[in-house]
Amino acid sequence: MKPQVVRECTELHSVVKSLHLQNLRVGLVPTMGALHAGHISLVKESLKQSDWTIVSIFVNPTQFAPGEDFEKYPRTLENDLALLEEVNEKENIIVFTPSADEMYPKNFHTYVDVAGAALPLEGTFRPTHFRGVATVVLKLFNMTQADIAFFGQKDFQQVQVIRQFVRDLNVPIEIQMCPIIREADGLAMSSRNRYLSPEARTRALCLSQSLEKAREMILHDGCRSRSTVDAAIRAILAHPNHSADYVAIVDPETLLPAEDDEIQLPAAILLAVRVDDTRLIDNLLIESEN
Image 1 (cartoon, rainbow, N blue to C red):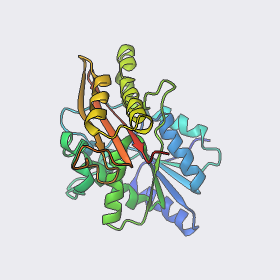
Image 2: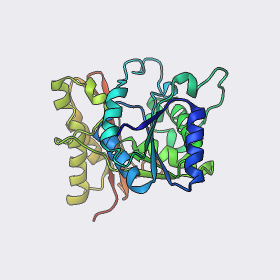
Image 3: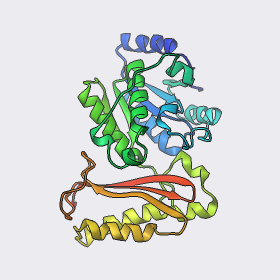
Image 4: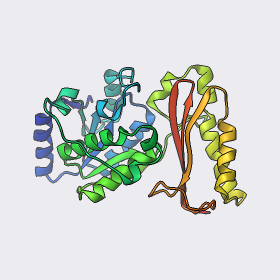
């Protein structure tokens, strides 16, 4: 069954109010569309844990800087709705797909300014990115009044930033991070993978391969030298048409490296690499030696 599609904030408010009056649990899956199996895994998890699931589809202009891929970011609403129809067996999916004017009307002047986990890594290379992310996500939390929201681990830093502002601003919502969904050959699923040529896509496997090498070094070889693991990762990523924005081995909560060279567990390894002209991210969370 096709999911219900809502385009205006006032209509969403009405729908959400009705759900909460019935004491129904509402899950939220925020997306920018161009859905793939990774997104659908989040939707399925929400369907398991919620009575109703709201999937937002909105390419958020405020999280893109000038020169980034806002204009060419894939917009595939009909295909997105078809994918959601396949999992809408209980007819309990609502799709919220507002326009930019609906989300940011004339005389919009209020933004969420995040620091802490938003400052390193992506914050260094895309300094306005998390301001836009935090603003649109908080708006979605307020509009949907969701009980729980689902995000993918592939955007690990984003999840930590959202958890941070939820805690700091006392937002009454549970945040759940779901595992990275990968292609059969290990490439992390991403809407931006479609930018890659077949040859570049093959080369892009170096991201997941470098993370697996790091896991092996840390867990099986007992290597705790951050500089040694960092060098091994960079060696696998190396190619004339690749450029690493960052390779970071950090504390999973603060996203900061230890003061010395020793890797402490749990640790997160985060990568941002340009493969030709396509910027890809991937990460690995190492909880413990077990």
